[in-house]
Length: 386
Image (cartoon, rainbow, N blue to C red; front, side, top):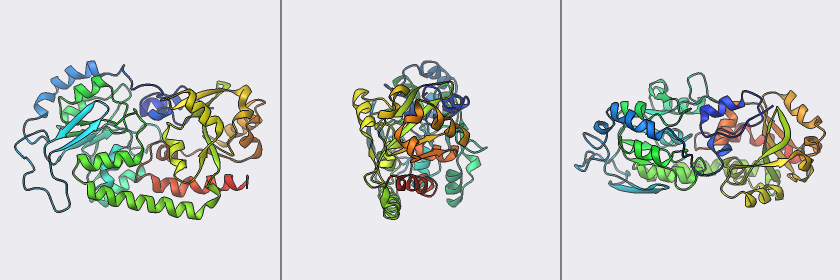
């Protein structure tokens, strides 16, 4: 069943879950990227590659957003922000001089946010685990088509071995966005030779969707649209809360398991985006989750000995499995089966990888998928503890 230690890249994540699956989130950055932003990235190697690919040429020259000659002069439509704009992030601040026209994304979900604001990126990371056959997601493709564009025209690059600066340089972007990425300092420096880069604000892989929306809106000059998208998304969340009052105040925990080693239980801390999303619906962290979060500051997951499974006091338990048989395996395990929510049947064992992707890194595009696919299941589980 399930997983391996959380990794940093989406593609890596998928590979990690091949063994068994409960894990679910690992690679999603948040999943297990626990600690600090990765520092082993391919940045050092990527830099020369970027240069070879013409990174410098693709940078501040020409129609780049870094240009100071007002490339977008007179181009701002009514309601669009005025440039230059300066965005603060984990590696300092980045000034975008003019309205970007060729946006590349390197985060797990930034491409969603860009499209939600009415723009289509020229490139984004390939979604290996939990994506469709095109390396994208169904909700992203639909949204791009609704904008009158072809989702197949978006270049997808593999970030299994780190952010591929050389491939990105070949696209000649004038803005690179990674508000929900695992970008390292070295990768940031390398990418900055290509175009202005907007990194995550504080924690790698752990930027709440509202913060990403605000940052991307500012970076691409669509703050007003961001406000509108925010209001619409929150309206959907509020409607789901009204439909499922049983979620309000219910305690929960997101967990993951490794099939080959059921001696420990992986518990996503409050730093992870999965539990953060459930907070939106009035759910609260189980006291054991709070305890593990406080004991492991800045990490996305923590291990709990299976011998302490009965202390995982969540009323509702959520996890991913490849099939229902794996859920039965957990329920019948002599140690893990003592987890209160497993014993009471108040759990959600997800088997839909795309849905897990939507949950792992929620966006204005994927949250509606969560509302339709996950919340009814969680509500049904919560009703078992009423």
